Image 1 (cartoon, protein in one colour):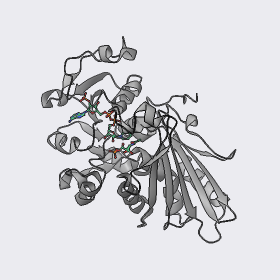
Image 2: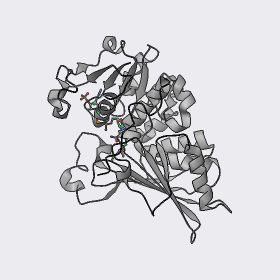
Image 3: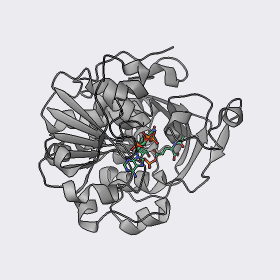
Image 4: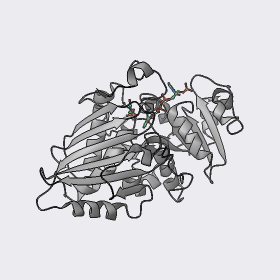
Length: 344
Ligand SMILES: NC(=O)C1=CN([C@@H]2O[C@H](COP(=O)(O)OP(=O)(O)OC[C@H]3O[C@@H](n4cnc5c(N)ncnc54)[C@H](OP(=O)(O)O)[C@@H]3O)[C@@H](O)[C@H]2O)C=CC1
Ligand SMILES: CC(=O)N[C@@H](CCC(=O)OP(=O)(O)O)C(=O)O
């Protein structure tokens, strides 16, 4: 397979390279840039010396036309304009940005504050939450790879909502992310001296992933709900911990929640249900495509505490994108992604 990466110099792009380099079916990788054409990639990123000694190319339709798969890992508002001319030209398109996730263009414009992609392509795009949408992903020409927080939140909640084991209303979701979630462009909030030794809530009640999570809950679990969802920046590089709180439905037990999660993900290699101990941390999944899930019911309140961890750059971005490519090409989902988490 010949693959291209637009936005190769960003964090998502670098993670795509890390995994695609070891992917048995990928024979050629082309790297595209909007700002640094002709620069040798390994001269910009020394850790890739002797590994990725290819020049960055300018984004050019003729060069893109030779590829089987194009990953776009660019800021929101870019692919809404970049991808329409490429749809249906032969390459599978896998977009890591938020531009094709929301079906309603007004919702995108409200939450992202940018012009939405063309309506027909928003309807045509397939939401790439691999474990829940594989048959559609297999047929898709344009995949909207999920956001990092939605991936962490949806994988544990969807089975429990679908089976009506927890109350779909009044869901409270408290999520924390490492700083690489904000990409490679420095900002005041991610400046070391302000982010280090601090722990901050941001985008309170206004995060752009709220409509994406609600849309997916409606799509896959069949329930309409309005969630309370908040995000926090923690002073570490990688990882998301999402903790959701939900009231139990009458007469449902903790064992039923665990059974439901285990049954749902039994045949899914990247989702692990953790039953030992009293919690989980992001180091369990760091550098890997795993999502680990832990559930504990509080008998005093009859509410479930539902925690999940992912690496935002892997299962939350590049890893899931490659998992989707594997589905599209009928490969085992683990191809190129079968790595042991860093842990430390
Ligand atoms: N970081 C994360 O954890 C996650 C990120 N995402 C989403 O994935 C996308 C990429 O994220 P991330 O890698 O972190 O972002 P970065 O900011 O690290 O990188 C984005 C890259 O896009 C390229 N770019 C910028 N402007 C343009 C443009 N106008 N046209 C084409 N390319 C452009 C830049 O490369 P160059 O200058 O070389 O063109 C840049 O390196 C974003 O939409 C993000 O929201 C999704 C899930 C998780
Ligand atoms: C820590 C941090 O800032 N994370 C980013 C991750 C979101 C993201 O990747 O946004 P898209 O919807 O454009 O994919 C954020 O909260 O906005």
